[in-house]
Length: 121
Image 1: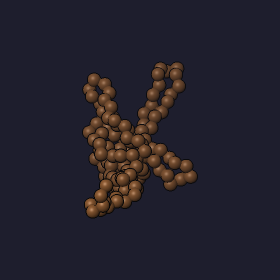
Image 2 (image 1 turned 135 degrees about the vertical axis):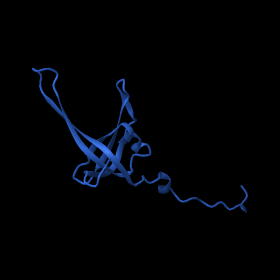
Image 3 (image 1 turned 180 degrees about the horizontal axis):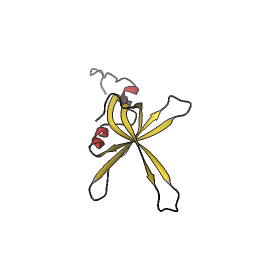
Image 4 (image 1 turned 120 degrees about the horizontal axis):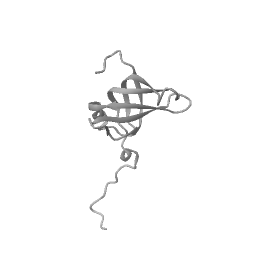
């Protein structure tokens, strides 16, 4: 559960993956990528939603402005004692708030035209 002390990241939804199930025990994971355009170049940050938190992204659309509360995790991996050691970093989303929804494309089109019923076709 997210607390006020947990770090937060605000950005625009760039990608929302489907929930995927792994292993015999049904471990579920889903990825959401946020775009941060505040720098010189866009920065794409992937967040993982785990187990029941996968549903947090059900109503997200590309273009939505969101704030994700997250915690960092890391792990060490080595195939055997003689192989190279690798380290992995993950950002697990533990809370998600939609700040604004993507604007409808219909709002960008021309205004509707009134049809005068008195004009014959």
